[in-house]
Structures are given as C-alpha cells and as structure tokens.
Amino acid sequence: MAAASASVVQNAVISSHQPVMDVDVCIVGAGPVGGSLACRLAVEGLRVAIVDRADLPPMEHPDFDGRAYAIAAGPKKLLEEAGIWQALPLSSCPIEDILVTDGRPGEPASSLFLEFTRADANQPFGWMVEARALRVALNATLHNMPNITVLAPAEVKVVRKPEGAIVHLQDGRSFRASLVVAADGRKSRLRSESGIPLTKLSYGQTAIVCAIAHEFPHDNGALEHFLPAGPFAQLPMAGTEEHPYLSAIVWSDKDALAQRFADLPNDVFAREVERRMGNHRLGKVTPVGRRWVYPLSAQYAQRYTDTRLLLVGDAAHGIHPIAGQGLNLGFRDIIALSDILVTAHSRGDDLGAPALLACYQARCRPANMLMLAATDTLDRLFSNDNPIIRLARDIGIVGVHRLPKLRKAFVKHAMGL
Image (cartoon, rainbow, N blue to C red; front, side, top):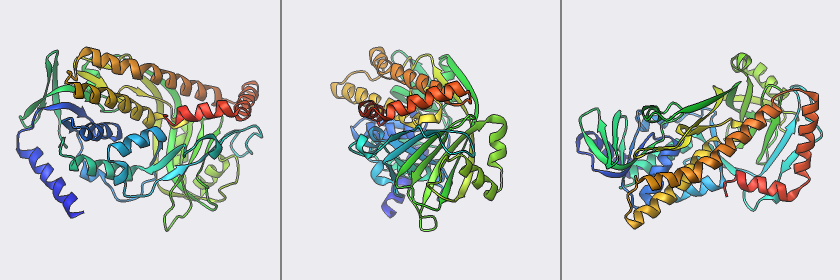
C-alpha cells in the first residue's frame, strides 16, 4: 500500500511540473470506459495519456453509496486483461439467475414468466461490483502503469489535423497524439466541438438507484419486473457484516413521481419497494445508503469518428437501463477498439488513419444501434397497462422461457460473448 501511494504521489509531481511526452493515444475522460481503455492499451505497450477534469484520488470515497455496476462476462474479461479486476478492493457478487416478470404495483406478478438459470450458461451471467470499488481499482491501476500519463484535474484544448493531434493544457504544456478518444460522457464536449450530430429520445421516466438490505438471501438471483410506469430491477450484491443480504435496485417511474418516491421516509420507501417486487422472495426490505435519481433518455451520435477522433461509451450512445447493458455497451466499444489499436500498433500503422477509424465505427455502431432499438422497444412495449398488449407480451415471455436454445442465445448476447 505504501508503494502504491508513493507511485501516486510521484505521478502527480511528474504530471504537474514536467513536460508531457508525446503519446500514441490521448483519452479524454477517466470514467470506467475511458479508464479501462487506457489500462488495456498500456498493458500492450501503447503510450497513453488520460485527461479528466476531476482529481482522481478524491473520487475514491470510502463510504457505501448504494450504487453498483452489473458487469457482463465479456467486459469482466476485459477488466482482467487490463489489470483492473484484480485490484478491486471489495468482493463482487455473481448473477446466476434472472427472473423476468410482469405485473402492477401491489399485485403478485403474472404467472407467465421468463427465467434464465445456471443451466443456460457455463458461468455467471455477470457480476455486481460496487461503484466505489471499481473507482478505487481504476485509480490505482491508472497511476501504477508506466505507459500511462495521468493528467487530472486538467482542462485541455485539442487541435486535430489530418497529420496528427496536439493537446494543449491550461498550464501551457502541450503534447502530440496520433489519436484522441472522447470518453467524456453524454454531454461530450469533444463530440460537440466536432459538430457530430446527436439524436435524443426521451422516455418521460426517472430512475431511482439505491441499495436495500433484505430479510432473506437473494441466492445470487436478479429480478426484472415490468410495471406500467417503468421497469423495476433488483440486482444481487455481496453482503456486509452489517447487512448480510444486500441488493441494488433500479426503479424507473414517471418523471413527476420518481423524485417524490425518492424523498419518502425510509419505512414508507421500503413499503413502496416491496409493492414493486411482484413476489416476497426477499422478505422485508430496508433502504441502505443514499438514493440517486437519474432522468432517463436514449441518445446516439450520427457517427463515431472525426479527424483523429473516436467516440466511445456514453459519448457515442446512451440507452435505457432496462436490460442493464449501458456500461457493458461502452465496454464492448473498447474491447473492439483495443483489438483494432493493438493490432495496428504491432504493425506500425498510423493509429489515427481514416481507414482505422472507419473500421471501428463499422464494428461497433450497427450493433450498438440494434441494442438501442431493442431496449427502446422493450421499454415502450412493457411500460404500459393496455390489457391486449399485456397479454401479448406475457405470452412472448413464457414462449422464450419454454425454448432453451432461444434462451441461451439471449444469454450469450447479453454476456458479451
């Protein structure tokens, strides 16, 4: 631990007072997607600079805050290859069973359901990782890799020309990069400055994200319960000494109501959660930690590339959290991009060449658009109370449940394998 701390201090001194060396790739945005890409490329010998407006160590808040990520099997492999998974300071929880149901608040779920079980895959469908744990692992790995220059907190101005990119820091320093990657989120400044058009879709829904302790064990099982106002998801988390049985919830509801629900006293909020479970398998629940509220929308960039620039993650696309695929979609971007860049680097190719950028867009954008369309359709199909549509979707749910090959195909795709 002392060695790691010394490395962080040394890195901070270098990045504050010495010239920044030219790099192969400059990544703007040190969130899970940008940070993981930096680590994955550095492992393969590429020189990387990563820039973020926030100071990274203070983002390692030690308190439990109720937020967690569902990491699919494919992205987990990426995090292992990048050296991040091994640095997680807290246990992750495997997701080994997913129950999909339909109903109304306060009523039992429909008797027609879909269940993905351990028989549908040879490994867990995914792993639940606390947000604070992933942040700690990312920060530690970023600061301890010799091929990564961490510039945070920092503001940059990027000048991109066909022959290369120059990154200017506010303190007067500058450096060159063959490629700039925009991993700066839904409100990406680099995307905006490039004039890349963005299309947005509003859902009129807001998600409440928090954690709950519960009376009975979850047995590593997740729940996706469709309700007229929006989907309700329960995701298993690793327990603590204080709360041995713990889950994350993502509760989507109408914009006008979600904040009011989030502000309820603990006992009333717990009752409302129980009314939306559709079953009593977890018993009594108790809210734990803070409640987060996020307005929901989908968006997509009309293209992922510009001169010496690529968009990844939320800078390129944002989808409804109905299937828990948002972050995993970003990880799939960088799995594909890492493969392209590492191969090009090994051949000595120009990492910012138009053909390479076009290859990335061709590999990622069509699949991402299909996922966006699928999640959009699912939400619009299930977030209503029309009796005819309810019957049709319940029949569809049970139909998939009774077709093992189709179930396994869904699982394989969702796992990113």
